Image (tube, rainbow, N blue to C red; front, side, top):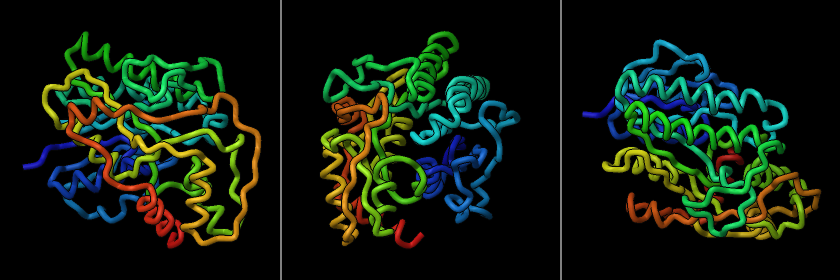
Length: 311
């Protein structure tokens, strides 16, 4: 018999794939989402399913939530394009919203998983980034509303475990991609794919030699579930991502080739505080969760391009 599970941000990109996986395995799922970035279309296939409930609410003020066995807290704006327009919303979702969900976990004795981010490492001085590295973050910079709020969310999650005995886990999520990303997401893969399919030049910020490591969404979901469901990890923090590192120039060329486009590449100024290198050390995930990503970048990009082409 499945568990009762709450997923905040469950109508979003990652959250909706997680909801699919949980329902497929027989769990009853309640989604809490205010649908500012989450989309009804992402969960529309589950309307009418007796094991699926959607609550239109903001995690900062959500109340009367159901008693559950597990809480995945994914709710937040995570798009770089939102950092300038919604900094207070982002900061409070990851602070007040996290407190609200931790209080609920405490009330119903639920296991709590915080979806943190590789952005807690900032522009890293250690490469690859491992969980013991404390990061290089500007608390007053243009990304601080997200980076520092996630760092505080981690602190609060640990504190609830220490003071109240809430059973917690923290996932530091690295760059993830796949179907259901928004075209206007502001992150590099949906931007490049949208531009390539439209026959427009791909916009590379900086000189394109900065690196990223991209994890396909199904691999991330498997990692999140393994972290939640593996016993004996109370209070632990684990990186989830793909170790395969590519430059932004290399990514642009792969997407141009897969889209079979004549699009060129143009260069623009690099945004302030944009990390130069990003690659996870996933040794802890491999050891504790017996997890590693399976989907090759070319295969994941092809699936993502198909999604945007048909959207």
